[in-house]
Each structure stands twice: as C-alpha cells, then as structure tokens.
Amino acid sequence: GRAGVALYDAKRVGFGGMSIHDGYYASISAVRQGIMNGEFHILYQPCVDMRSGRAVGAEALVRWNHPTRGPISPVEFIPLCEASGSIHALGHWVLEQAVSAAAHWNAAQPPGYEPVGVAVNASARELMTPDYADRAVALCQAAGLSVANLGIEATETDFGTASDNVMVNTEKLRAAGVVISMDDFGTGFSSLERLTRMRLDIMKIDRAFIGTIGSATADAPIADLAIRLGTAMSLGIIAEGVETREQADWLIARGCFLAQGYLYARPLPLDDFVRDWVNIEPDSTWWFASNPRSL
Ligand code: C2E
Ligand code: MG
Ligand code: MG
Ligand code: MG
Image (cartoon, rainbow, N blue to C red; front, side):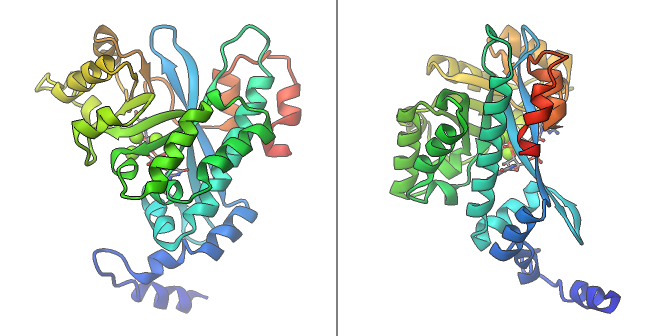
C-alpha cells in the first residue's frame, strides 16, 4: 500500500548512491518473474551502411517496464542484474529472442537480399560462464540462424576480465563464425597491445567521440585515430551515436561507413524495425503471422 511505498522509499538511503533495495528489484527471482510476465522487451536499432542507407544489421537493446517502477533504463538495471546474478537469465532470454527474431526476418526476405544480422550485448559475467558460447551457437542452430548473422558485443573492460573463460568463450564464438565486436571503443581500460592480440571483427567507436565531430572545437582526434587504427587492423568499424549529417559525412570521408544513431533510427520495436529496415514484401502477411512475438 501507500504507506509501504513511502517506507520503502524512506529506506532507500544508499552507500555510493545504491542501497540493497536497488539490487533487490533486479534479483534473480524478480527478473525471472519479469520475463514470464512480459515486463521485458527488446528494441532493435539498425546498423546502417551510410553510403546506401540500408541496414546491415540491428543491435538488440533490452528494456524493462517494471510493474511499480515504470520504464527503467538498461544503464541502470544491467549493473544491478550483474550484481545479483540475474544477468544470466536475462542475457539468455535476450539472446534467444534476438536470434529467433533475426532467423525469422531473414527467412522472410525475398531471395537475393543480403542477410540482416543481429548483435547482442554480453556482460563480462555472461562471458565468464563456461557454456556461454555453446549456448549462443545452439540457439542459432535451434532457430535456424546462420551464426555469421549473430554478433556478440562486449566492452574493452568486459573482454579484458581476468578469467580464462572470457577468452575461451570469445575464441569459441569466433571459431564458430559469430561476429565479435568491441563496444564503446575508447572508453574502457585496454592497452593497444591487447587490442592487437585480441582477435576481433568489429570496433564500435563510442558515441562520446562521435558527438564532438562538427562541434565548436571542430575536432575529433579520437574518432579519427580509431578509424585509422581499425582500418590498419582490418576491422569493421561502426560509429555509435551518429546524430547529424555532418558527422556522417565526416565519417564517410575517413572510410567509416557503418553507423548507428538517431540520424538514421532510434531503437525500434521489432515490427517497426522489420517494416522499415528489412526487405520484406509489403504484402507479405507471413512475417506478421509468424513473427516471434506471436510464437
Ligand atoms: P550500448 O551497447 O553501447 O548501446 C548503445 C546505446 O546508445 C543504446 O542505449 C542506444 O539507445 C544509444 N544510442 C544509439 N544511438 C544514439 C544516438 O544517436 N544518440 C544517443 N544519445 N544515444 C544513442 P540503451 O539502449 O539505453 O542501452 C545502454 C546500454 O545498456 C548499452 O550500451 C549496453 O551496454 C547496455 N545494454 C542494453 N541491452 C543490453 C543487454 O541485453 N545485455 C547487456 N549486457 N547490456 C545491455
Ligand atoms: Mg552495444
Ligand atoms: Mg556502445
Ligand atoms: Mg555503451
């Protein structure tokens, strides 16, 4: 009741801005129940080839519509899920949904179109579980998605976690044909030495370094360096957070052709992403009759 809520709020005195109550709402049982109750959903943000304007893939971004707290940002709840251990259940669910969705949208494309992949974020905690890579590959097989159309993203800091399993999983995923992306490049802790030692497919330049392109200081030395480093290492390069035409033109001029950002699209509900960014016949009721949401 109302008094209970007030008492609850009054007890939210934290250490370091956090209290045990914050972790409690993302506990294993709460997240499991939330999954069953449909409190979570996934938005898909297109990764666009800026030259053609077409999507080459989508990033799956989870959302939590909490029954009492309302919509919560993953920036807030993912760290709590990591702390409570519920990240494993949540991460598996996201992977399953995203893989199944991508299997469906690729199957529904008319022949002759390039596949549209899906990328899923993985936390260090997930990469530390011995069976992560095997589960990801098994989910692709079960859904009928080519592993080459699945990407796994983690940050420099996550990839650098001192656990043999992280490296084993990453290597296993890559050997199976899954695309490995380093997320938020430039913001984490990693030496350039380790970057060259790690076998990556894609570098995603953090939006902090994209936002300064075309600003008053008119300088984006980190984005410039990252593109040159990524190019020299033969990596795919994705610019995160592209919001203006000027930023897009600056990136294209330097050989970075892939981008995610509000200039092209915000993260979208599955049906909107498929309608606007995947080549499905407009009169095809097949997708809407069989899409994963109604399975
Ligand atoms: P991320 O993986 O770096 O995802 C990119 C974030 O940038 C997303 O925030 C996206 O909505 C936002 N973004 C994209 N384009 C623009 C733009 O043009 N301008 C601005 N200002 N923002 C843009 P979102 O969806 O809030 O996700 C935040 C973070 O939460 C993600 O960062 C990722 O680290 C984490 N996350 C989201 N879903 C999952 C998940 O399923 N598992 C895990 N482990 N982490 C997740
Ligand atoms: Mg990401
Ligand atoms: Mg990122
Ligand atoms: Mg990020």
